[in-house]
Image (tube, rainbow, N blue to C red; front, side, top):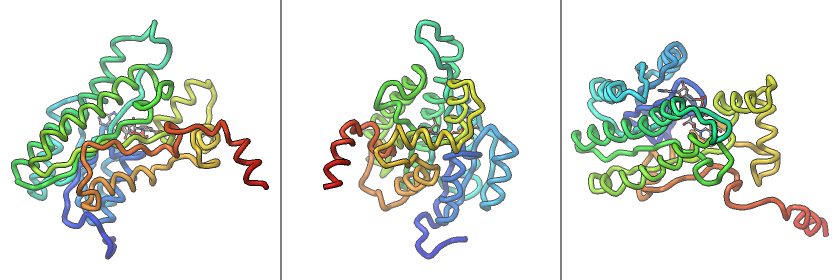
Length: 275
Ligand SMILES: NC(=O)c1ccc[n+]([C@@H]2O[C@H](COP(=O)([O-])OP(=O)(O)OC[C@H]3O[C@@H](n4cnc5c(N)ncnc54)[C@H](O)[C@@H]3O)[C@@H](O)[C@H]2O)c1
């Protein structure tokens, strides 16, 4: 259903990692706002079902493979003749554990998905947007792990910090074409990537709801509140739409204040507020 206030009418978007989690929420929200959405992922059944449900297209796309990303962009161009929004969102957690025992093969695999996946997405989206002489919005999913140490594995942190550098660099070149490039840094959203990380860390079959509670209590200044896929999808919608038309080379952090401030003085504020 297209709402009257739809913000992406007649826009064409590719969402990588769009089969589930944050990407799926964004794909749905983009479509609700009038966009034609190509869902690109390696989870074919989930991705195809989602694409069908939102009137979009699905393409099997391993973002670490340049040719797959090129094909995803070509699908959008062949379908609607244009590409307006590229959401480079696919990502993996990669190896955890001590830096002294990192498996470099696993690190390479992570960098191929998290860094090169974004590079492939920017490369082909920018080429398509320039060729069709349209302005465009490219959004990459970074992480709070790029802002503060200890919020992800070493290789994951490396990859997410790199994304922000790449975004700034690409924004410098592409602004002249009217193409904006920004990143989003979510924190503690209880999707598969985070719940699996908690399970591995704690050695327990913890559920998404429990992870949300832990993050809400310890990882946000907003009492008991953790981030949701809706929070991130809304931010992606903002950056995708003309509402953010003067914003580029920006990293939009969605962390309930966690990486900017501490709640360690909260006992003082609580007693102050009681007076
Ligand atoms: N959940 C969080 O707390 C959080 C925090 C910061 C950043 N992120 C980032 O958000 C993005 C989305 O993650 P999510 O939270 O929705 O987790 P998720 O695991 O639910 O979703 C990740 C999606 O990426 C896809 N994917 C993985 N490897 C791929 C590849 N090689 N090619 C194409 N698709 C691939 C998966 O199939 C899946 O659909 C990731 O980049 C992640 O690093 C998540």
